[in-house]
Image 1 (cartoon, rainbow, N blue to C red):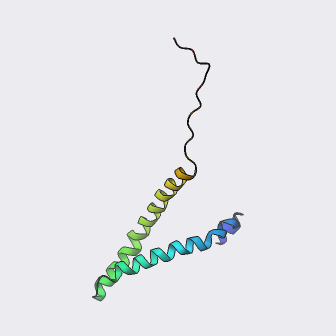
Image 2: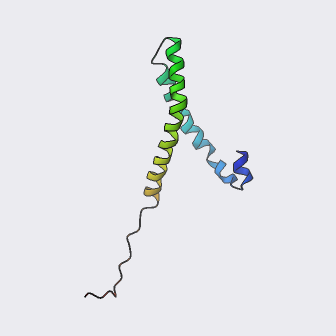
Image 3: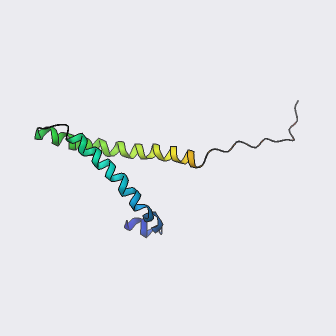
Length: 88
């Protein structure tokens, strides 16, 4: 948060509750994944899988979701047609 404040974008923190809600959903899914096993060594392995490749997967999914949300919020504009074009 200090980095956000230091570059003058403190209004980013206005969305902290939304980020926290999303993080809670991810944490719940993580625990559901881990809880499918019983033996301690399997639990530990699932924690590692959920953390290392799981974090990379979440970053990629966030980027894809940003592209999708951006396209829906700011749909591409149709190119303006030029009425004075000549044929021939």
